[in-house]
Length: 128
Image (cartoon, rainbow, N blue to C red; front, side, top):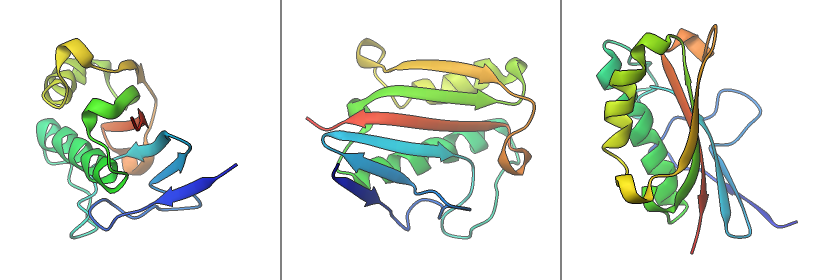
C-alpha cells in the first residue's frame, strides 16, 4: 500500500499519534478538525459560528494541501456536543458545499470531544 502523509502549517498540528490527513491511491482521509487556530495554536470557542467556521477552514487548508477542494469531499462525519447546536453548525457547514454535490455525512451527538469543543468534523475526499 502506498501511503502519503498530508500535512500543512495552515491547519493545526496533530496532538498525538495521528496525521492531519493520509492519502492512499486517489483517496484522502482527513482527521477530525477542531477550532484550533493554526497561526496561534490556541483554541477558539468564543461562539459556535466562529468555532464551526474555523473547523471548516482547517479542513479547507488540509484539502488544499492534498490538491483538493470541498467538491472532492465524498463523506463527512460531524461530532457535536449538543444536538441543539445542529442548526447553527449545519448553516455554516452548508456554505462550504453546493447542495447538488454535497457529500454523504452523519451527525452524531457525543458526550465529550477533544478539549471539550462543541464540534469536530472529519472528511474523506477523492481526487479525480
